[in-house]
Amino acid sequence: MKKVKIFADGSCLGNPGPGGYAAIITDDKKKFIIKGGEKNTTNNRMELTAVIKALETLDKGNYEIDLYTDSSYVVNGLTSWLDKWIKNGWKTSSGKPVENKDLWERLYKQVIRHKINPFWIKGHSGHPENEYCDKTAKLEALKIKNEKK
Image (cartoon, rainbow, N blue to C red; front, side, top):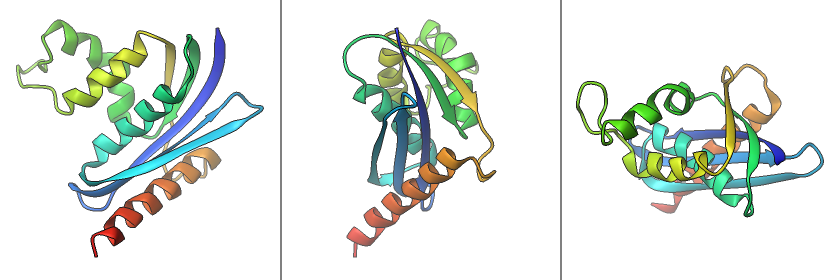
C-alpha cells in the first residue's frame, strides 16, 4: 500500500460567499498541489472539497493517507459521524438531514478505497503546510470574488 500525506484547507469570504480550497499531496519526495474555488459556498464545503479533490487526484489503487486539516468538522465527520449517518440513512442523531450530504457521499467513496488517518492541527499556529494551504485557499476565494466585478 502506497503511503502519502495530505494537508488540506478551505476558506470562505462570507459564509456563504466566494470560497477557495487548497491541498498538498506528498510522499515526502514529491509534492503535488491542488487548488480552486467556487462562487457561492460555505467554509465547511470548502474544507470538505479540499480533502475530496486531493483524494480524487490519487491514481488507481489503495493508499494509506495521513490527512492533516484544521477542520474539526472534517475530522469529526470521518472519525465519529460518517458511519452513523450512513446507518441512519443520511440523518443526524437528531433526525435532521446531513448538511453537505453530496460532499460527504463523495468523500465516503474515497474512505472505502483508502486507509485514511485523519489528524486535526491547530490553524494559524505556524504549521508550514497548513499555513500554505490557508493562504492559497484565501487567494483562490479572492480570485473568485474579483471575477464577479
